[in-house]
Amino acid sequence: MTKNDTICAISTPPGVGGIAVARVSGPDARDVVQRIWRGRRAITSAQANTCLVGTVLDTCGEALDQAVATVFHAPHSFTGEDVVEVSVHGSRWVQQELVMSLLKAGARMAEAGEFSMRAFMSGRMDLTQAEAVADLIASTSRATQRLALRQMRGAFSDKIERLREELLELAALLELELDFSEEDVEFASRERLMELTAKVCDATARLADGFSAGRAIRDGVPVAIVGATNAGKSSILNALADDERAIVSDIHGTTRDVVEDLISIGDYTVRLKDTAGIRHTTDTIERLGIERSRRALQEAAVILLVIDASNSEAPVPWDDILSAMATSPHTRLVVAANKSDLVGEICNMDIPAERAEVVSTSALTGRGIDELRSTLSSAISAALGTDADSGVLVSNARHYQALREASAAAARVLEALQAGIPGDLVAQDLRECLAALGSITGAITTPEILSTIFSRFCIGK
Image 1 (cartoon, rainbow, N blue to C red):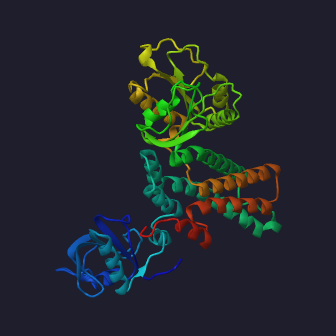
Image 2 (cartoon, rainbow, N blue to C red; image 1 turned 90 degrees about the vertical axis):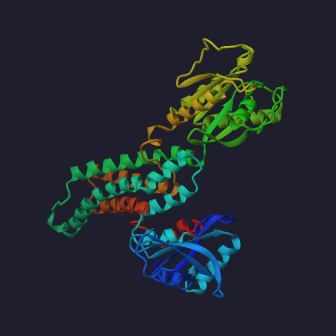
Image 3 (cartoon, rainbow, N blue to C red; image 1 turned 180 degrees about the vertical axis):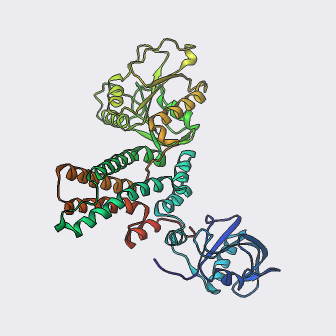
């Protein structure tokens, strides 16, 4: 946790590319790079935030490659230390030789996540911001990128710290009362403490409640494609994915299990689930598939109902759909009136559900598929709530667990204050609430937690 030597690693993705960047950080970063550098300007005398052009040497002292060195001075760098980033051509062999040369010059190979850990230890970022760096690198859609960027800029940690600071002052006064317990004095206003505790309890509970939406954005928003057999569900999945992902057949009951695929729709990564047609059947395997279809319905943020517009007699599993929508008030319904090429425009469709939109489609001709994508994107935004675009969403399981612990501790404090419980017992629960909030940003943490978090980072970050 307190290493202050100089480390190095390749920061760009492994493999061949146009360029590769080696990052060097530590008190001797400029001296280390200078030992393998040949150029008109020395690395050691370069001003902060400047780029130098020169040649880097291999372990034998021979020219390895033309390079650009970008110099950052402590504390105004990513890690808070002196940093030099050396850009070379992206040959695997050149990258390997550059690292070997830096190691020979006095650097040490960085461990996974060590650059970000040093940034955290030097106070350049808190723990939630460091975790957001990894999330930003792993982002797969505009929504996940925005979520990580807001956290990296401190939106989440600022909210947590404001709550924590408000409680800290009153917690200190409550602790002071314990030192003067024999004199029957009251430094902390019980009314003010109850007001703040209720605020913390409500805020932490609301943040924890947003975990399902944040996790859906990060891992893929669940969208269940449901409908009667042979309505064209698999064809719609293939059309949305722009690929032949599912088997399509005129035979009823072709899809007997949930077929899942990750695709991009609008700003979101979507976990699209093509389900078995819901109908009465005596086929044991198909019945198992139908049960899985019902589970997918219950888990979906958006239900995509595919109906056969050319067959008004085709059954629609309204009972299952309405049951799923009643379970979650945020679930949205999008109806794809498929095979519209056989009947023309779709009019006066009776949809016995609120929060629903109808799109006329033809998976065969592609008609209405772009409109369906747009409608699904809007439905997803509505299902996730406005916080998905402008507020703070929790997507990290560690944060979620800490918020639940803080909310539970705050609830115990509030209950104790209302019941007139002695201050020493109230103080213990208050300490637990503060500790849970502090563990989120890293104000209170342990080496084991830090090692677990940063070990998941890539080497070079």
